[in-house]
Length: 282
Image (cartoon, rainbow, N blue to C red; front, side):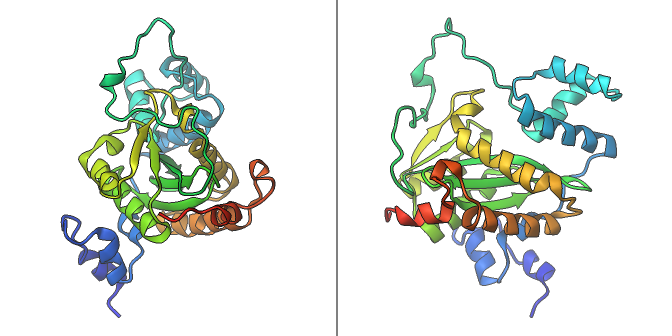
């Protein structure tokens, strides 16, 4: 058997004829293994980023000035420029109320928000996707996940050290291969989700594209709740030294989340039970 590191070197990420997910399957590699190298920062920056990640779940409405004051109270010598850079790395998007004086030009949005007032009645009707930051003992990584809104079932996920559109598209392709294509996929307006790679992936499978309003992370509330569960129930309770440990831990957690974790909103059933009970074939 060829060692995994040598098999990884055989992957051609620029090959448009054979998707990365297919190449990994042929080489018996888990696709997330391609992205295991953690991003590096100095120890103080990592500590600040860990703090920001936990603080966001409590006060997503805080902006730079409040966060700067909070960090300075904790003894960190940080300026606005450095703080803004670290906020970008952890994906901090300050929530703010929409002003009634602003008139939005709907034509300016290539992909509108399709879920407002729309009843979600079955599995594979709507999937939601997003990326979140995950701290480790040494460095950090990003988690991309896909959740079925009707059942809260996690149909796909992957780890990476960069937030690339190709990484997102490959994970979606694998989820579709396993579960079939949904009618709609909803995301925020991040650059990964407005790229040609992502858009072409969804259009190829005739999936309607829905996007949240800018600065309105609450529109994607179900996957935001997933992030809270993942972090409070697993990531913050375990110290993962590297990407391999993180992947193994998350693999166990998502298996538990889908198959064993009872959801009050699902009448104390598991996501897997609800997903397969009312799955509509693509």
